[in-house]
Amino acid sequence: MSKNNVQKIIVVDFGSQVTQLIARQTRELGVYCELINYKLFNKKKLIDRNVKGIILSGGPKSTLHKSAPSINKNFINVDIPILGICYGHQLISNLFGGKTKYSKKKEFGSAVLFEKKKSKLTSGFFNNKKNMVWMSHSDSVQSKPKNFNVVASSLNSKFAILEHSKKNIYSTQFHPEVFHTKNGKIIFSNFLFKICKVKKEWIDKYKISRMMKSIRSSVKKNEKILCALSGGVDSSVLAHLLFKSVKKNLICVYVDTGLMRLGETEEINKIFKKKFKKIFHKIDAKRIFLNKLKNIHDPEKKRKIIGNTFIEIFENFTKRKRNIKFLAQGTLYPDLIESKSFSGSPTSVIKSHHNVGGLPKKMKLKLIEPFNEMFKDEVRKIGKTLKVNKYLLDRHPFPGPGLAIRIPGKIDQKKIDILKTADKIFIDELKKRNLYNDIWQAFAVLIPIKTVGVMGDSRTYDFVCALRAVTSVDGMTSDYFNFKYKDITEISNKIINEVPGINRVVYDVTSKPPGTIEWE
View 1 (cartoon, rainbow, N blue to C red):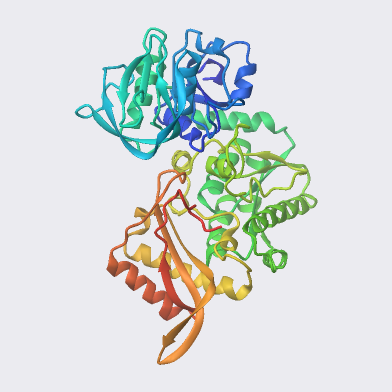
View 2 (spheres, one colour):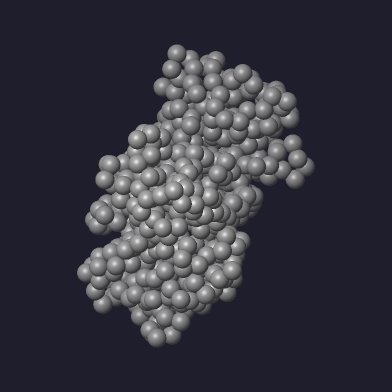
């Protein structure tokens, strides 16, 4: 099956932090979709015959602003179903003669939606004519366009769902793509299959086939790919995908930064030397990274230094090996959306991931990033299909910069050693208590402040260790794991008793947002 004859949905991106969740919901339902910046979409002269529906995303701008992003009205007059979400909802209203105004009663977070009319879009969505949805808007549609019907309302949004059934145009003020909207997937399912009448063609085997075809078409016969292999879920699955695609044209390189978890380098070496044999290489760069990070406090500087140093090491390695033209990374969509806009839309930058915003502007190697439209759980599914080692697939996410971003402020070897020991105790205890698989990500942080303590009737003045454990689906949002009092108490006591240099342990109960999962 070629990409050219696959039915697809276009997601027009206006810059929402959760735009990719729309694409994700679509793909999970077995439908191929493409994410495109609204500016590029407006430059299109024709809509591809394989496009069966268009979804307009949310965005950070106001439709009331003179320079507000918009869409060519000609495209919403074509015979293709359209779904507008949040900003897209307000934009559709404005384009068809409705009015959007700044609302004194804003809606952020959960809201109750009340059904006003039956609709193809909401079939099976409401329970007793009510549903909990997630809102995030300051502006609201104040008067609906002509020939549009009100499907649902909330307390502060009279026109929370609108439809023009004859033109197959639908819009929602809330975000059905986020986890917090109950039954949000039903909205997408109804739009795709009842309104767009699209087929289920986007399955894991096809995704793998498409990625392999793309890799092979990019790499010439004698050219080699250097895979940046950290041993994490993403890079491990990537290495297996590349090996299946190009075999002997692959070189896997593991860089020991000295910032990995305790015993991790030995584990990774053992697994991949056995799997990839002669194409696996280990580089000891502990001293290089520690020297470059000396006296660096700012987290953005840390990430950029680490990203640049990785590239320097890889490019130096290529001087010893002929014909390496490509660098492959296990970059995911959350990395991109936090570091920069994925499609060129006005998305806010949260932090520069070492493999995205941390890369140097000029690189000799060309990037290959097959997973940059995916989330970690999607990559795990790909890994299962490729029969990747279960131990590797089940591991918690671990950031490329490693422990450097779990030691806020200045880094030195003493702090690294303290944190490695505390982190290992934390993870080992989670596994012992059968909690590890209930948690999406867990780790320890060494806070750069010292506090007074009492041990054996003597005064101590040592570091504070923060424990972080979160539940999540895709890393875009998360909540803290609700430990039993007994478990968190015993784990904390064990760290204090067994790790010299720590005399106090705290537990981080911040969700994402407003926090991020990692501390830096």
